Length: 242
Image 1 (cartoon, rainbow, N blue to C red):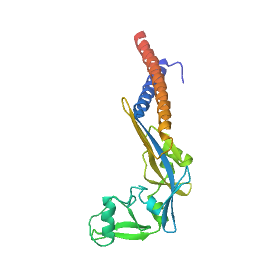
Image 2 (image 1 turned 180 degrees about the horizontal axis):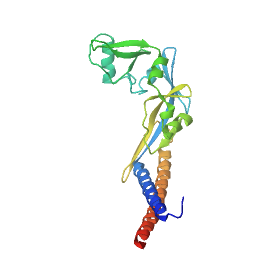
Image 3 (image 1 turned 135 degrees about the vertical axis):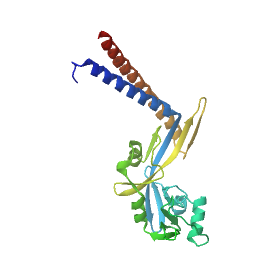
Image 4 (image 1 turned 180 degrees about the vertical axis):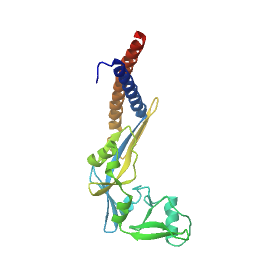
């Protein structure tokens, strides 16, 4: 940095101070909610969908796994939805629908994956496909994930005040397929809080995470104010001296 140009230095301090101040304010504003995210390895073994908790090693198999929103592009994952009921009836020939596109790219029926394709007559066909092909077509590369999502994949579970952009979406990481699910949430109000989780110690961890982020946000805010005051005051003195 060229110290012979103090105005440029003060301007840089002002800009950086404002940027840090806004970042600190954003962190502080996010502390009304804390989420827990858990990574599950997704495999298909002997005609069964298997979700393995990366943190605990616990498995969810076919019937239990199929109630999970593994990927929002797969109809009937989860089962029990209106869209699943209609897709299954269409697959069995009970109803017929037309269109040129669908929000779903694949379906999961009775332990098998099917690719949805529209014909020239704008009717949908269900083409049976290997699970590995469906996973490969749908999965995001882990390079597109945020730090919070990578933490979930590598540690199995993570807690954050920042929402992740790719929950309930297949991701490829290290040659394997995973889905990241929200398994806990704690919302803070003016006088009380509400917490829901899968029965672990998340509710206590959420309080710690919230305070750590709050302190970090306040620290950035103070640093930002200091930088803005020094930079703004320096610029003001420089222009007055002219």
